Image (cartoon, rainbow, N blue to C red; front, side, top):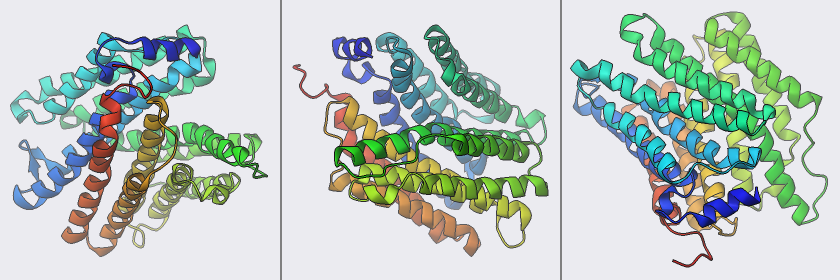
Length: 396
């Protein structure tokens, strides 16, 4: 890990490519900030079309495989060197990987006649990224994180599956469920490490006890139940068994969250936002399960957006703000601007959750998109200078 830090500090090229979190956090947040309003605008001004294609399909794809996968790339390229002790991907290698991600976003606007070529361009990023993740984890003999390799590989497969939807009926819906399930799985796995760890660090520094309950059999049970529930939902999304398993997983995650005693860290926004993000994960799983069991009372999209706009939106901002501060040499303290960013994304998620309950009100959709843009655009505005600048304390 010392070598990793030294490699980052010793990078002499453009600061933006001195660490994976820098380009991916900055531009994924900018992309996330524009995807939602583009879709809402197309919905009302262009007959629901984006680049001649169904705007909803474009929106779903770009949120899952563009925005979210960009954030995942930034996080993993920063975390894996700490897991393995290997040098991070920086410089030209990082710039090339980032260039593939950018090419995929540009390809999303290709006209229908170029759809096959655009699909190849877009799919290449996750395929190459998965190979990089496998290489680093295996070379570092870090068997504990082989599940992460598998999840990234399945994300790449889900993206390819999404692109073959015109020739394979139902492939787009299957790809969407798979991608959402993988996002939930990553939040369960990685969130289950960082939320109690950062909470314990904060509480321990202030000699507040007891802290979060350490990882144990119950946590292993929750992860296993989550994998089983999400697997059932992917394969049989309308089966009652999948609904009950998802509902059970939602309850299990709620209990797991309570065992971390997050209320004790309510004085630090960088910590409590992680707990709220994880709470959205529990809520999302429970609502998806409820939608399966009682479709006439609970709209199917309710749980999907609790998971997407809520869990994914809140957790990505929570991780990006904390990681950016720490890895650029700043104190891990949330200023007033950061708190407003958190409040904006929470308001966006709540508003988006209300829309299906009011016949997808155009006003609520527009307000939610605006708040989402405010949150992620705000992150880019506030944290962008840190991401493109030198690490604090370094000359030049």
